Image (cartoon, rainbow over all chains, first blue to last red; front, side):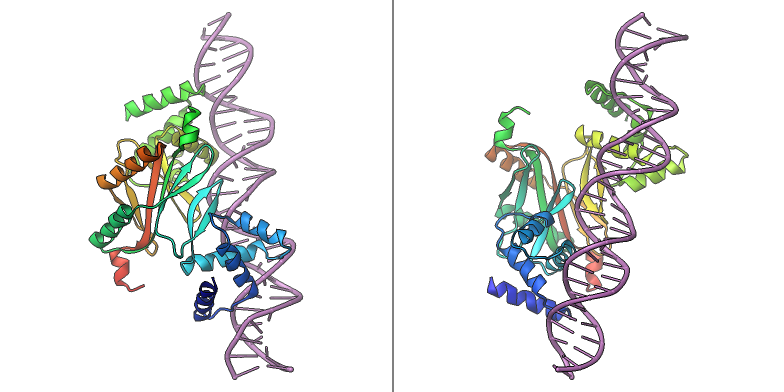
Length: 145
Length: 145
DNA sequence: ATTAAAATTGAAAATCAATTTCAATTAGAG
DNA sequence: CTCTAATTGAAATTGATTTTCAATTTTAAT
């Protein structure tokens, strides 16, 4: 945690920007979230603890965090973006149930292998990837929807 | 083509909806597009041929086409959705160059195999999947961006 | 073919996520 | 501490998508 914050400060400084309380506070809050999150969720959390961080700042900081590779936009649901922390996580895919909206993560080294292979084969410089599988989860499937 | 239109008519009828000229015209136009498309592109094409189909109708018909599995929303760029025709296409992934914005398709049976495996393993009912790889293409990579 | 009811249309208004503007505040180099 | 440029929150704006609604069209039943 401390290490990530220090690293983020370095990142901000290197860009000639200022390391503000708001930026640190936003990253701290994000690091405390286990699952996926969206702007509303973050805003709500700040409201709850009487922090008056604005949505504008949240949006602005999220851009920086994506740029620095700290978080990723992983999928879109209900017309807006959902994010997750990238650091210390193996690349993985998301299974999204279109009925109950549950999101499950699946990690598979074979998938990462395939993607690395495409990268080398075509001489791409891979930055990130998203694999989203849409369908019905085991439970919702049983409801015969 | 004719077969797809007939099948779409059946789909519309089964839902108790009306098979209108606009819906058919929109699907026809989409089937004539090789690559990916977005709402603007479609709207522009209708304008060009003096067809007065509205954006509202385009949006409404796209929803139906997605629901029926005729098209898929494949990625988001510049704040809006991009689609492609699903029928007769093998599932595939998209490599999106963040610099020149070129989108390349990659098909790999091994990937489809892996996904089928996840589906069976977890007893999901898979509907569709999207795999997007973001990075730099061979050409843009050379520019050392 | 007419007709009537219900669905669909285009145009405009509304919605909503995301971005931008701007005056006031703050970080941080010197 | 001081100064300048960057950042902030709030409000305005943008732009995609959705909704509203009166006029039109489809289609099933006459």
